[in-house]
Length: 108
Image (cartoon, rainbow, N blue to C red):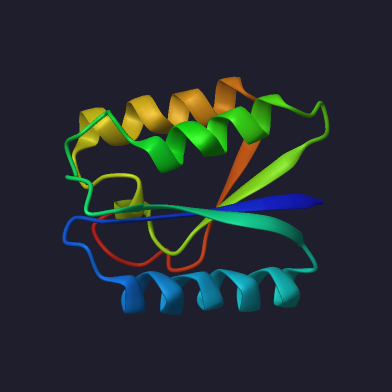
């Protein structure tokens, strides 16, 4: 299955983004997913719906009819806010993408 990755950090941190990208790469290898690219929003607030990286991810999902997985390190990379999280998950679902979460323990 084709996979795309997504990470978001509130506070810009290139080193942390790179570590998270590598974590997604390792997860995809382990799960036998074909990772195309990891999109990032570096320095984007948790409550913001304006996310250039997420919009690029959605464009990539829409560009193919094949089933795709979207891999995130944890749900809080989408948002820790219930409303924003629900909206983003609905967008992914409606586009036909399945959400794969590396670390599922925690508040989400």
